[in-house]
Length: 293
Image 1 (cartoon, rainbow, N blue to C red):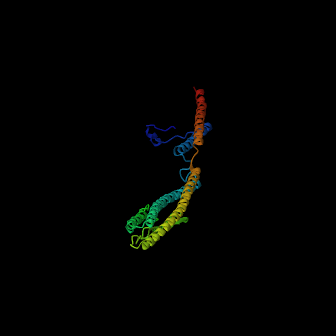
Image 2 (image 1 turned 60 degrees about the horizontal axis):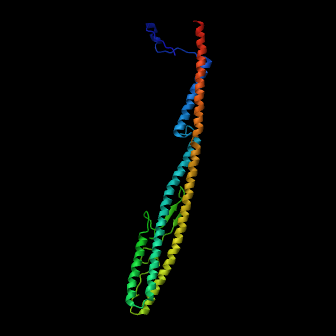
Image 3 (image 1 turned 90 degrees about the horizontal axis):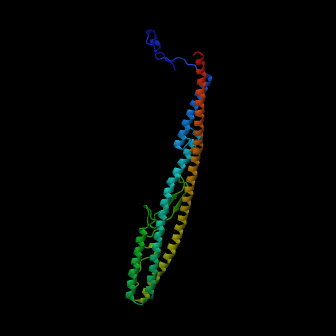
């Protein structure tokens, strides 16, 4: 560029103006090529630094919004995944409670068998106290089998949502074993009656209730086990679906680092060639000056 900077009064009006400069076709083409290469280098360097070929809707509106939709759905499923994890722990807590209740019930069955074999009213009365204490522990265990505010052994049903809009759910029906008769076992009575026949009948009634309770506990454990398996299957499915969604989104916006690096290397080479060509074009103009030398 050439600018007028004369201090003469008549030249003041030209101060700051730029003369029109005419470039040769060869020089102009090389300058334009260098400008285009610089722009492309900037784009590729941005892709390499961010790892994405689509960073905004301006780069590719279709891929950008489609990837956003896929990522949003994956995030929604991620929140459902957290709920499934809590549901699994809730069912597992109830299952551990049933396991403990079953062991207590088996001890109660052993106590009732020992009482049935005894011919001493005093011994039966002592065993009755042990029986009722074990029954109290059944209630306590059932009360302590909750997780995250939900206890499937205390009549607190559980609902698990599997998809992002909660149209796919599963309900786990709770039982109420924290009331007067845990798992259907009433308090024992009259074991130590002076009439041994009356005591034997009362013991038999308690033994039958305990045996029925053990059956109920095993049945309920199987039901909870089925629910637990279902939730775990849906959890694994959701994890796989999230990976699929995120993989699809990444395929729309992520850049191939190897390809972009190769493109940048090729552009650097082209830039060096264009700079050399520009230098040669300028030299051809300078040769004209030598004619006036």
